[in-house]
Length: 459
Image (cartoon, rainbow, N blue to C red; front, top):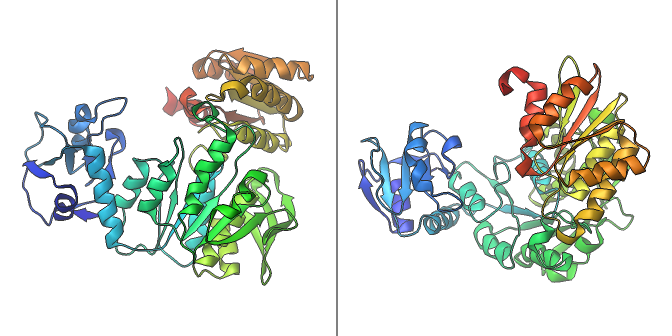
């Protein structure tokens, strides 16, 4: 929440349309007109598309005003339009000003996989005691992180912010806005997502380390003890370091891990002074580290250990991330948001534990560069171990299917896109099947998952 006066003071902009009441309040910001919240301020950013072309649509959908770089014609008379020299720079300046005005403690989360799930787990654990501001969806870049702080309210007591990395210096810059007291690094696997955008895995690790380098001396760096690259970053911070994981030397450790199939899992979390049983309503052993990191962050900010552990039981999956969606005919494991080799491996292991006929629908894993062929072959071998039926979507997925056949899986198919996959599934699926949907975000497999669960809405 912010006022027009706060915006004008922070951005140096001027009102060129509408009633310039300085006490006008806006319910956060937006950059996508399709999901602009009622009462929000729409920022006409220039990216793959020019946001100025969508100002009218954002206002029609409920946005109260817009930030533009030049006048836009044919707008409602009561819309508040602010002109600035650079809309993205104005967004950041406003976020900085709102952060200055609300110096609540923050948890920053980065890593090559697991950021969003760890963010949700941390928000759940902190929610045992506090009102939490957290990143929406995967708002983790130079646009999404500032947008998060445009939603800050006086009642928020702590922030949990996901921070992504594409270029050196990006996390360092965003950390100046987030100002984390606690930093979590989740995982940096051997075959990382977006590898084609970076020169090496070491460069990715160095970029992720910028988060813990930004921590104050009295802050806390939570590092995954089970990931050699992450734990090796400990010397890069002046903050206290806590290792979490299943490794025996982890300060915050999980033991007695029991998988409950698609119903979730349970384990015992323990440190030097406490232990508590944790029950997660989501499946997948890979979620143990997310839960431990959440407990570490919550206890560092004043939540009792046992309360943080119990609160994790309320955690809900982010949309299209290991979401178990049931119909009268079958169960859909909707993990369609994105795909990396590590995430595909984890999802297939969850599918493998289903006590039914198992159908894996796996799309291309994009942006892997020179690692692509080996990664797709490994996914195929994983599929052969954990699925009874495999459907590969896209050109790269042909390698997955070929490797699965070589490993002994007999019922396999290849299709060009999600629409073709849906037609095939209508003939392949049997009552009682468990279906995994997994693939890179650009394949839009979330629509395939939705169509399987709610076919009437997908027409």
